[in-house]
Image (tube, rainbow, N blue to C red; front, side):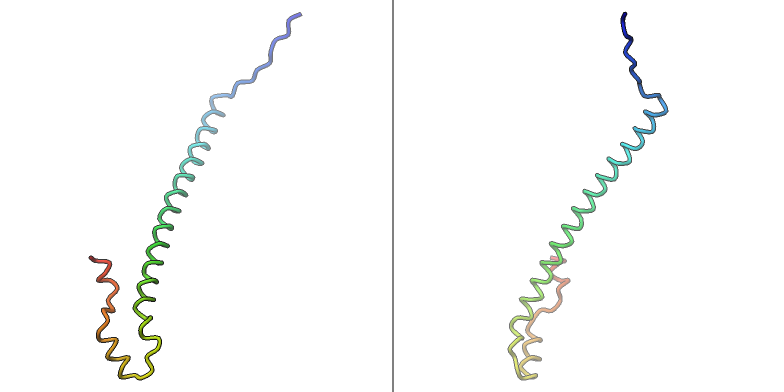
Length: 86
């Protein structure tokens, strides 16, 4: 008595469905990686901007007279976008 193995091969329709699902999952994973990379770059840029702003404002934290504050502000380059254009 020989027993015949009962192997089930996926049908062509099933293979197409699995292929489409796998493709969608891979595309979504790739898209997620790209989005995380861009978010990471944005966070680094925001950290650098906050660091620049903090360095700019640090000297004026302890100025008590308004005239000294106004004179100090005239000497500071307050245009942050000029640093980005360089």
